[in-house]
Amino acid sequence: MNDTDLAFASIEEIGKLFRKHKLSPAELTKLMLARIERLNPKLNAYITVAAEPALAQAKKAEAELFAPRGRKGHRDRGPLHGVPISLKDNIHTKGIRTTAGSKILKDFIPKEDAVVVGQLREAGAVLLGKTNMHEFAYGVTSNNPHYGPVRNPWDLARIAGGSSGGSAAAVAAGLCYGSIGTDTGGSIRIPASLCGIFGLKPTWRRISCEGIVPLSPALDCAGPLARTVDDVAILTGVLYSRVGREQNMAKLSTLRADARKFCLGIPRQLFFDALSSEVRRVFDAAMRELGRAGVTTKDISVPLLDETEDAGNHIAWTEATIYHQQQGYFPARAAEYGDDVRSRLEMGHKVLAVDYLRALEIQRQFIQQLHLALAEADVDAMIFPSTAAEAPRLNQETVRVGAHEYPARALLLRHNRPANLAGVPAVSVPCGATLSGLPVGLQIMAGVSSEHVLLRIAKVFERFFQPQDRRPPI
Image (cartoon, rainbow, N blue to C red; front, top):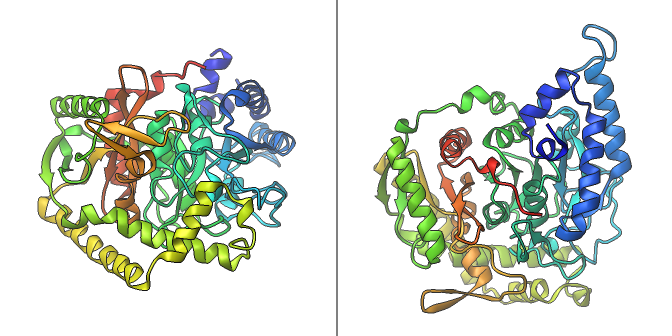
């Protein structure tokens, strides 16, 4: 492999090179740091690069892996051992600043790691640094007024999506082998879709959010972004392992699946009401290809789908404002927020109690309806486009779909709120590109604790669309 091939290798491939002593964790970490130094000025994917700690972790991993088997000091911590990854900058890292993309926390250095960081360290992962994001995770563009916008590696004039935009851009551009982001209304899946990678929002509370700056605790999830399904499975397995729930998630053999075994439900409401012509073309072509492979589909209906966006907004607005008030940030330090985040915190003040309670009731009913719809239709999961449009340009406020102009933020959110509201897992999978080369993703959503099913289905998709063969033109 040349350096570029190495930068885009899978975690499994890197692990094999380590264990054959054909590559060392220190060599690989230096390669990643050099790529970050060269490409990050274009992408603005990282806020903080932790070069010295990363090299120290890599040398420790190297000493453990390369010590003779059976001798003192040898230890193989598993598939992530010595592999360089990144973390969204709202995840606490001991001794490394955690800004949450904000001016208010620009000098905040946590005294303890978040739970997920402890799990990654125990697995031997090398933490390269903290990725750029939408301020306080409260937006879907990652146009950050304090640290600059994250740029899409497929077109630097376009957004990477958000709020985990830096994570997605770094993974897509070969600046790490995976990243951990957060998702409250699509903040893993939206940037994964716009950047052409895989992103998993797990079942609510299956991955710990302890030690992560919250947005809306009733909806927040942490999860992985990576270039292959197997890499997503490896990261997910590590983050589940402490609670013993999915010990075999990282075993790649568990992801093998026959396309003919799956029946997927297509919800014709909401997800297809406002869809760009290019996203529709790519999605329809993908479904035809999967049909030829043996995947079956049927239409499915969930009555309250159309109300999930407003319900999710009312919950998120209220909880976000309460958190920022409790921390003493808002309204006392209102001038230190970006305009868009400040305006949303102000909206949280205006949510009536009756509207918040109605949102909670819609959430309860929607959870029941979704489980019932999946069971009655006898489908393994639902499938639909991850976003209604391809990546908008930086600072583009509206997107034209047909004869109508839609707010860009609302258009990107609308396909993603349902999974957060229901607390169910969903994964964004690359399925092709627009005529101009911009990635398009499709989303698979299933019932509670069905991550293994989603990843098996995603593995089928990966075989046909092979997104790892595409590399951004940067």
